[in-house]
Amino acid sequence: MLGNFSYHNPTKLYFGDDSLKFLNDELKNYGDNVLLVYGGGSIKKNGIYDSVVEILKSNGKNIFEDAGVMPNPTVEKLYEGVEIARKNKVDLILAVGGGSCCDYAKAVAVSANCNEDPWQKYYIRFEEPDCEIIPVGCVLTMVGTGSEMNGGSVITNHKEKLKIGHVFGDDVMPKFSILNPKFTFSLPKYQMVAGCYDTFNHICEQYFSDDDDNTSDYLSEGLMRSLIKSSRDAVVNPENYEARSNIMWTATWALNTLVAKGKSTDWMVHMLGQAVGAYTDATHGMTLSAVSLAYYRYIMPYGIKKFVRFATEVWKINPDGKNDEQIANEGLKAMEAWMKELSLVLKLGDLGVSEEMINGIADATILLNGGYKKFDKNDVINVLRASL
Ligand code: NZQ
Ligand code: ZN
Image 1 (cartoon, rainbow, N blue to C red):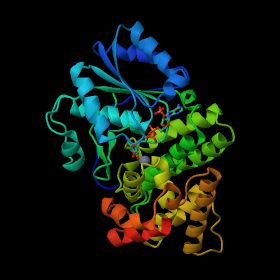
Image 2: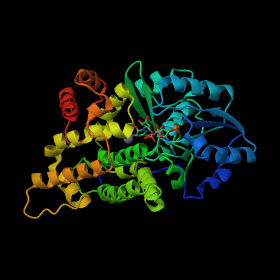
Image 3: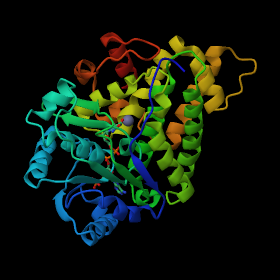
Image 4: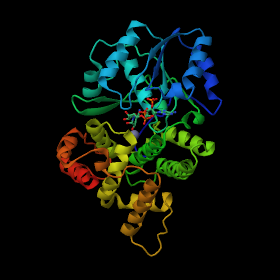
C-alpha cells in the first residue's frame, strides 16, 4: 500500500428488495421540508414515485418537487434547483433516480446557501463549500456511477462545451442511500449495460496504475470478475435478481473510495469520456466504452506487467508459452469480446463524433497524470482518432 491515507465513508446503505421501508427511519433525522429530486418520469411509470411519496406523507413531510433532472445534468438546471431549494428552505434533498439525480442533488446541496456562482466556484475554481450544506439522501434506480456512496457531482455546461466533475468531501456525500436491486429491473438494456461498463471502467481507472503488490488491486480483480459474470447473466435475463443485486453492490464498491486506497489512479478514460459527453450529450457509460479499447491499447506498453496480470487474473488467459505482449493483448481481446456481448458502443462515430470535432474534444479533455502514461494533447488526439 503506497503513501498514508485515512478511510471513512459516512454514507449509510440499506440494501435489498425490502430496503425502501428504512426511509421511514431515516426521515426522522431531518426537518419537515423535503426536496424530492427526480428525472424525466421513469419513477412515475414503475411505481417508485408513489411508494416514496407515500412514505414522505406518512412521516408528515412537506414535499417540494424538482423534476426533470436530465441525464448529464446541466448548469441551467442546477440554477433552477438552487432557487427551489432556497425558496422552500429545504431540510433534506431526496434524490430518486440514477447518478444524474444523485450528482445534481449534491450540487444543489452545496449551492443553495452559497452566494457565489456554483459553476465558477465548484467546477471552474474547484473550491470547497464554505456554506451550510443541505443533507442528501438517495433512492437509487440506475446503477453504475457510485454516486450513491461518494462525493462526486458532475455538471455539464453546454454553452462552454464542458462537462466537469467535482469530488466533494464527506460532508457532501449522501447521508444514506437505499439500494433495491428490483428498482433497476425497468431500466432499458442500453442504460443497464452502459451502467455495467461505467462500473467496470471505474475499477480500471483505479487498477491501471503503480507496480507494487497492493491489496486494492486484488479487491478490484474480484469486483471485475463478479461484474463480468453478473452482467452476462443480466443481459440474458434482466430480471435475474442475483445478477442485478451483484451488479448494484459492485457498482457501489467500485467508486466509494475503497479500491483507490494506497494507490495513484488514472482517470484518463473518464476525462476523455467527459469531453466527448460535453460535445455529444451521449450516455456516460457509452462515452467510456467508445474510447476504452483504443486508450488501453495505447498505454499498454507503459504498464505491461499490470496488463498481463489483468489478462490472467481477470480474464483467465492461459499464459503458457506466450510472451508478455501476447498475454496482455489476449486480455484486451477478451475484454473486447465481453463488451460486444453487452452491445456497448465501441466507436466514437456511433455517438456522433466526427473528425472535425476531435480538436475541440481534445481541448476539453482535462489531463491527469496518475496512470501509466502521462498524456499530452497529442496523445489525446491519437486515442480519439483511433476510437472514431
Ligand atoms: O430521467 P428518468 O426518466 O428517470 O430516466 C433515466 C435516464 O434517462 C433512466 N432511468 C433511471 N432509472 C431507471 C430509468 N429508466 C427506467 N427504469 C429505471 N429504474 O436512465 C437514464 C439515465 O439515468 P442517469 O441518472 O443519467 O444515469 P447514470 O446513473 O449513468 O448517471 C449519469 C451521470 O452521472 C455522472 C455522469 O457523468 C452523468 O452525468 N457520473 C457521476 C459520477 C460520480 N458521482 O462519482 C461518476 C461517474 O463516472 C459519472 O461521471
Ligand atoms: Zn463513470
